[in-house]
Amino acid sequence: MTVIGTPGPVSLDLDGRTALVTGAASGIGRACALRLAAAGATVRAVDRDADGLAALVADHPDGGRGGIEPRSLDLTDLDAAERAAAGADLLVNNAGLQLVRPLEEFPPEVFHQVLTVMLEAPFRLLRGALPHMYAQGWGRVVNISSVHGLRASPYKSAYVAAKHGLEGLSKTAALEGARHGVTSNCVNPGYVRTPLVERQLADQAAAHGIPEERVLTDLLLADSALKRLLEPEEVAEAVAYLCTPQASFMTGASLVLDGGWSAH
Picture 1 (spheres, rainbow, N blue to C red):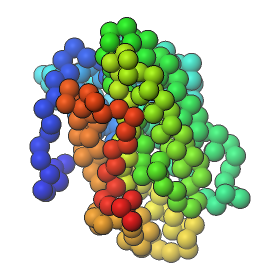
Picture 2 (tube, rainbow, N blue to C red):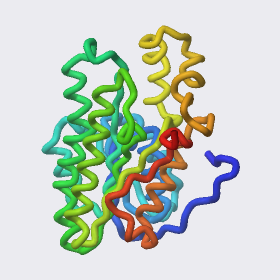
Picture 3 (cartoon, rainbow, N blue to C red):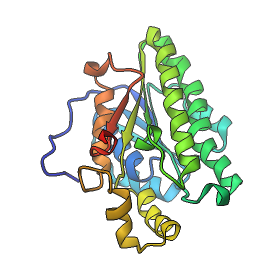
């Protein structure tokens, strides 16, 4: 989807590179997989949604520069996640899940699952990918964080905790990877037009006791200067930029795409 007033895709040549994108079956991960494949990369598209991966492959243009290799994988299988990242030149940690509940009602098993998928799995994927990146003296790690990696909101304890942890993990990877030619950065979107955000509407309505139609205007975008959802393709362009030679000095950073929310 092209957003009025935004420029076209950044110039990016990833011919011969291998990228791994988690949560690739929908939303931001899907947009990133298609964008990196369009730039010439062979994309390992990781998700537990096999049908969504099949749809992703079908939507990749025939004869495109790169390719998409679907990998059906549940990231709670941490050993398998680490193995899947071996040999990757680019790693995009995107997979996530959300539950909106007050702290005293938050199910401990869901808290554990969120931290496993959104923090421990990225750590294990880094373990799998970094030896190859270090050996070749080049690599790109892009962690899809959130404005919630920098700010907190009520009722999102697991998600906020995971994203704050991901910020620290990304910075540590940046410091360790610098002498090996590996950069590590976060991209921090506000609310993006994805299935995860759409599912939040009902959860937030229940948590706050308001109709769903008011959740977007009164809650999700209340502090945003730009009163619209961010598009997944816009996030994918930020990811693409971080993979360019021009971004080689950008590491340990958080690239915020929140429509002015954190400017308050």
